[in-house]
Image (tube, rainbow, N blue to C red; front, side, top):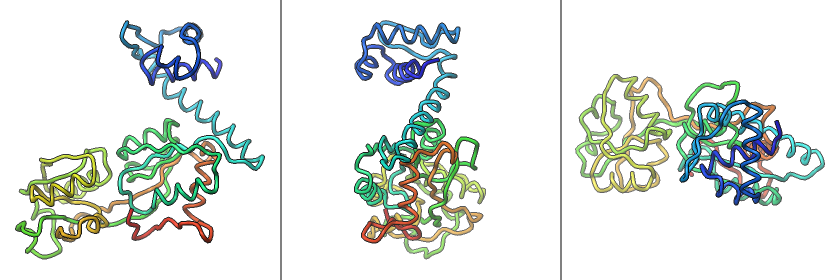
Length: 306
């Protein structure tokens, strides 16, 4: 099995189209088709269902995709490791992050990294923590800053950044604003909630906190960005339970502490592959996170407001 066959296979799987994949790879469509056929002959299984409009993965193709991505990521890591030994860090840093993650100043960290390692291409993807964990485990991302969604596995490890309690945000004229702090989940059961998509770290934390307290809740207004959430609360359309540092993003809102949640906290982590599969670029970024040099922008840990 040749690496170029795996490169070609992954490209077609991502684009779901032979012509687009061939253009991206800068190869002829006939050459790409021949490469896929050679891989299918070697594996003795069809990898794609081809139609005039698109191609989709067969069951065998879906089984191969994750392994192919991991193999290619390991090859890239090996190439970059050799370059690093020779004194030059180059290649690509593929980073994922949730919005407004606590514990690290992502923009400042990347600016410092770029100054230190100008030959490394930086790619940034923003998504929910569940998706980011899958991307790191599959080798599509070098690392990600996210909410802890699971224990460490053979394909994924985590480095803790910070932890913080959850806070209730409401409009100053909402009935809860005068109730005083702290609140407990049982006092919020009948409220209209504004929250994020279920894949987001703050949503997962809030769901866990209310489940621990045995209090059901319904999210009526679901959004995918922080500012939309704050705008809806600011219009008194609902309340939100969010990490405590969110209270500084809209000081006009009333912030109330939340207790009796079985010690559920919003814990943010750096998600990485196993030590042996971690790319030199990811190691360099983590080194900056831990030990920024004088004159660099030091990413904050506890109390970060990103």
